[in-house]
Image 1 (cartoon, rainbow, N blue to C red):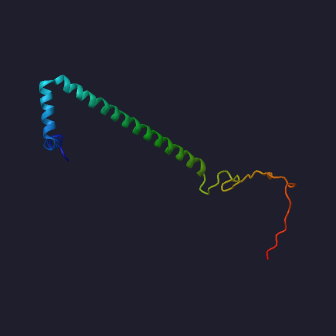
Image 2 (cartoon, rainbow, N blue to C red):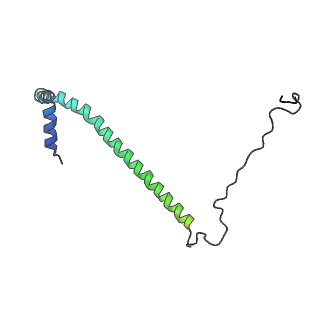
Image 3 (cartoon, helix red, strand yellow):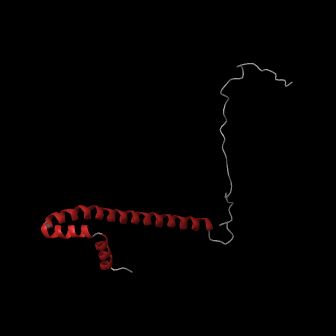
Length: 119
């Protein structure tokens, strides 16, 4: 596992001019460097806090869904091992389809019937 110092050293080696600029800015104008740091740190903090808030919400929703699933399993399993609790008839697997009756859009007295004969 890399340490913080080895990672920092790699960044310095890859970006020597940027590192030199940051060091000169820190020596010559610490207020300006602080301002730039604030510009970078505030959005970073907002992003980190937002990430933790999203992850907290996701874990809470996941826990709620697991609780609902466990409650559903407890309700459907009943107290006995046979699958039906209390001996009453279960409506599992029963499907009812309601199809509305549609009246034709054109009345029967419109048009005439033509007998078709193929030759």
